[in-house]
Image (cartoon, rainbow, N blue to C red; front, side, top):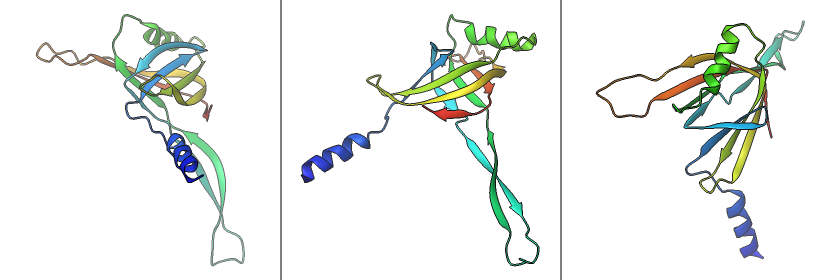
Length: 150
């Protein structure tokens, strides 16, 4: 029995040693990324000073604030993300659903986050240097109305 518990604990505690990120836009995988940041949600702390209770301030959960999602990867032949950014620059309605999938080395999905009504707000192109032999990296930042773990 102890062997079973130990083996169950080992499989449930599996971590992604070399994580990879696949990104879906409206249900279609568009790219893999080297870096993903902005998986942050903060609940505002609302305070209430109750009359007569001078020894404490009551605290309540308030609105949630979500930081922007930033994705970075090597430049590829696909210009889908940049084209999407250009639609926003032209004031076209360009909100889409984004899903970020964390996958392991053997391409098993570990976790996913679904971002609601996202649109690109910043695109950063690569630093171009003839004296460097590094990968040309582009970054794109998205605003969104919140995310949920899938």
